[in-house]
Image 1 (cartoon, rainbow over the protein chains, first blue to last red):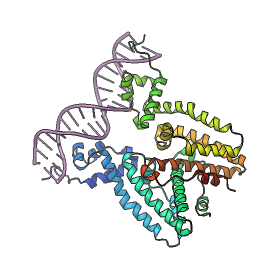
Image 2: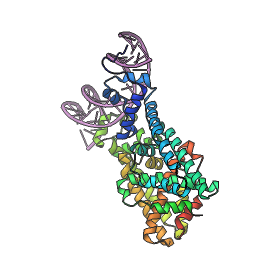
Image 3: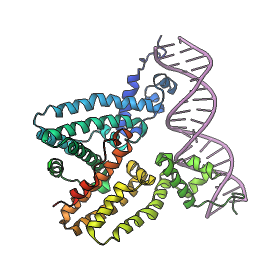
Image 4: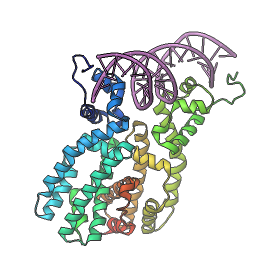
Length: 185
Length: 185
DNA sequence: ACCTGAACACCGTTCAAGT
DNA sequence: ACCTGAACACCGTTCAAGT
């Protein structure tokens, strides 16, 4: 019953994983249904049995990353008991971790329609971790929320500046400064 | 000698202005040589007499904006004598000004190759204004540079968060807080 | 259930040929 | 100097037809 003589049938997941690799290499704009179909030695038409359109594919790819990546990473950080240590770990993640290519896409192409939803969910989760940690450190709820937003905006802008070679030379702001900013009364 | 019977000859500038309007409406990805040619009732081929390629067109469009916009705006701010007042004016520009569509493109598509150069120049100019103002306010040079970077990263991230409807609800950080952050000893 | 093949529209780029 | 027209490649999307 397989029409792909000799080749295995393709699932939605196969396409999504191939798209995720394409995003890794060239961002969202590097995802071309046509090229993926050629790689699979199949037709573009067959793609449209599995997905409604290209945006659908990109969303599926990023959700794959979201499931396998974000939740796990946050879990590790959350397992730290002392809230101040946890806060330092969060900030260190941002300033020291070698940068994940998908993360870069998520930040720098966050405005692309198929990326926006995943970006929002990941960001909400991270803001929540920041806020609750700041509350444990001793800040009132409202102030914690405000500083979490501040810290996350800082993270986003920091990485955007660093991505531009002409600007990277002027940065970055030191990590200690950010910690002080977050925890000062 | 005009081959465009009845129609005026097109200049590089005509194309660049049309492209700038297209960016205003739909960002960099909204610029299509094909569509512009149709609007001008000419052929795509004629476009390539004026420009090397599409990126060339986009760069020209943004440079138009850069000349007519950035330098002027910075000039107004720089004319304020008192450095603390000037600093407040700069921050107010960011947090209160109705958002210019081209500015949004500059920030959210800063990583697109034809945008990167303009983004870098505009950012350098703004960082310089911030730093020199902070020095006048009384900070040492190195600390001023660090805080200028911090403030600008904050600006970029702030706007990126605000652009996402799901996230806009949680912000924004108050302007007073940022001023305090910049000027505290 | 899953795929093929052909069609259509849209777009970037090149280039010989026109005026 | 500036433009036309045709060609080519690449891509997204649809859909009737196949197995």
